[in-house]
Image (cartoon, rainbow, N blue to C red; front, top):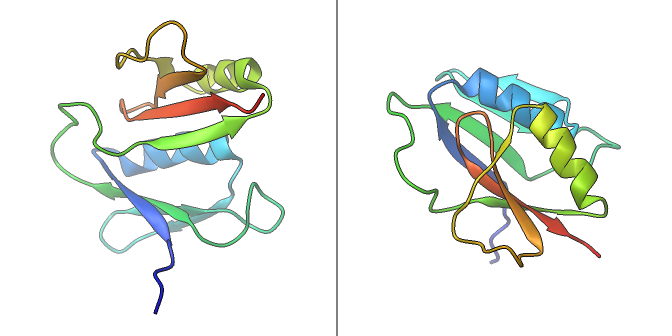
Length: 121
Protein backbone atom coordinates (compact mmCIF):
# COMPACT_ATOMS: atom_id res chain seq x y z
CA UNK A 1 0.00 0.00 0.00
CA UNK A 2 1.31 3.48 -0.88
CA UNK A 3 0.33 6.91 0.30
CA UNK A 4 -1.06 9.40 -2.20
CA UNK A 5 -0.54 13.06 -1.43
CA UNK A 6 -3.92 14.76 -1.68
CA UNK A 7 -3.41 18.29 -0.40
CA UNK A 8 -2.28 20.84 2.15
CA UNK A 9 -4.32 22.37 4.98
CA UNK A 10 -3.57 25.94 6.09
CA UNK A 11 -4.96 27.49 9.27
CA UNK A 12 -6.49 30.88 8.60
CA UNK A 13 -8.47 33.53 10.45
CA UNK A 14 -10.11 34.52 7.14
CA UNK A 15 -10.19 31.47 4.84
CA UNK A 16 -12.13 33.17 2.04
CA UNK A 17 -9.66 36.04 1.70
CA UNK A 18 -6.60 33.77 1.76
CA UNK A 19 -8.29 31.36 -0.69
CA UNK A 20 -9.07 34.27 -3.03
CA UNK A 21 -5.40 35.31 -2.99
CA UNK A 22 -4.20 31.77 -3.79
CA UNK A 23 -6.87 31.17 -6.45
CA UNK A 24 -5.62 34.27 -8.31
CA UNK A 25 -1.95 33.44 -7.64
CA UNK A 26 -2.26 29.89 -9.02
CA UNK A 27 -4.95 30.49 -11.63
CA UNK A 28 -7.15 27.79 -10.07
CA UNK A 29 -10.92 28.11 -10.46
CA UNK A 30 -12.08 25.05 -8.52
CA UNK A 31 -13.49 26.18 -5.19
CA UNK A 32 -15.69 24.57 -2.57
CA UNK A 33 -16.98 26.02 0.68
CA UNK A 34 -16.87 23.38 3.40
CA UNK A 35 -19.38 22.76 6.15
CA UNK A 36 -16.97 23.89 8.90
CA UNK A 37 -16.10 27.22 7.26
CA UNK A 38 -13.13 25.94 5.31
CA UNK A 39 -12.51 26.86 1.67
CA UNK A 40 -11.05 24.20 -0.62
CA UNK A 41 -9.17 25.15 -3.80
CA UNK A 42 -8.28 22.76 -6.57
CA UNK A 43 -7.28 23.13 -10.20
CA UNK A 44 -9.69 22.44 -13.03
CA UNK A 45 -8.67 20.70 -16.24
CA UNK A 46 -6.15 22.81 -18.16
CA UNK A 47 -5.03 24.80 -15.10
CA UNK A 48 -1.49 24.46 -13.64
CA UNK A 49 -2.14 20.78 -13.00
CA UNK A 50 -5.30 18.75 -12.78
CA UNK A 51 -6.57 16.68 -9.88
CA UNK A 52 -4.93 16.47 -6.48
CA UNK A 53 -3.41 18.17 -4.66
CA UNK A 54 -5.79 20.69 -3.21
CA UNK A 55 -5.22 23.49 -0.73
CA UNK A 56 -7.67 23.76 2.16
CA UNK A 57 -7.92 26.97 4.18
CA UNK A 58 -9.54 26.10 7.49
CA UNK A 59 -10.75 28.67 10.00
CA UNK A 60 -8.99 29.08 13.34
CA UNK A 61 -9.51 31.81 15.94
CA UNK A 62 -5.85 32.69 16.50
CA UNK A 63 -3.54 34.59 14.16
CA UNK A 64 -0.23 33.11 13.06
CA UNK A 65 2.40 34.09 15.63
CA UNK A 66 5.66 32.47 14.44
CA UNK A 67 7.45 31.35 11.29
CA UNK A 68 5.64 28.63 9.35
CA UNK A 69 6.74 25.09 10.09
CA UNK A 70 5.67 24.06 6.58
CA UNK A 71 5.67 26.26 3.51
CA UNK A 72 4.91 25.93 -0.18
CA UNK A 73 7.55 26.15 -2.93
CA UNK A 74 6.76 27.16 -6.51
CA UNK A 75 9.16 27.02 -9.45
CA UNK A 76 9.03 29.75 -12.07
CA UNK A 77 10.54 30.28 -15.51
CA UNK A 78 9.98 34.04 -14.99
CA UNK A 79 10.77 34.52 -11.32
CA UNK A 80 10.92 38.34 -11.40
CA UNK A 81 7.64 38.55 -13.33
CA UNK A 82 5.85 36.09 -11.06
CA UNK A 83 7.12 37.78 -7.91
CA UNK A 84 5.90 41.15 -9.21
CA UNK A 85 2.50 39.63 -10.10
CA UNK A 86 2.17 38.05 -6.65
CA UNK A 87 3.13 41.32 -4.96
CA UNK A 88 0.39 42.98 -7.03
CA UNK A 89 -2.08 40.47 -5.54
CA UNK A 90 -1.04 41.40 -2.00
CA UNK A 91 2.01 39.22 -1.27
CA UNK A 92 5.02 40.85 0.36
CA UNK A 93 8.69 39.94 0.52
CA UNK A 94 9.93 38.58 3.85
CA UNK A 95 13.33 37.79 5.28
CA UNK A 96 13.59 34.41 6.97
CA UNK A 97 17.37 34.42 6.87
CA UNK A 98 17.70 33.34 3.24
CA UNK A 99 20.58 35.74 2.44
CA UNK A 100 21.20 38.01 -0.54
CA UNK A 101 22.65 35.26 -2.76
CA UNK A 102 19.55 33.04 -2.68
CA UNK A 103 18.12 31.76 -5.95
CA UNK A 104 14.63 31.87 -4.43
CA UNK A 105 12.42 34.72 -3.22
CA UNK A 106 10.51 34.35 0.04
CA UNK A 107 7.08 35.96 0.06
CA UNK A 108 4.19 36.02 2.51
CA UNK A 109 0.54 35.80 1.46
CA UNK A 110 -2.20 38.13 2.70
CA UNK A 111 -2.19 36.48 6.17
CA UNK A 112 1.59 36.26 6.46
CA UNK A 113 2.06 32.60 5.42
CA UNK A 114 5.52 32.27 3.87
CA UNK A 115 6.13 30.63 0.50
CA UNK A 116 9.02 30.56 -1.94
CA UNK A 117 9.31 31.29 -5.65
CA UNK A 118 12.26 29.36 -7.08
CA UNK A 119 14.08 30.28 -10.27
CA UNK A 120 13.86 27.42 -12.81
CA UNK A 121 16.83 28.79 -14.77
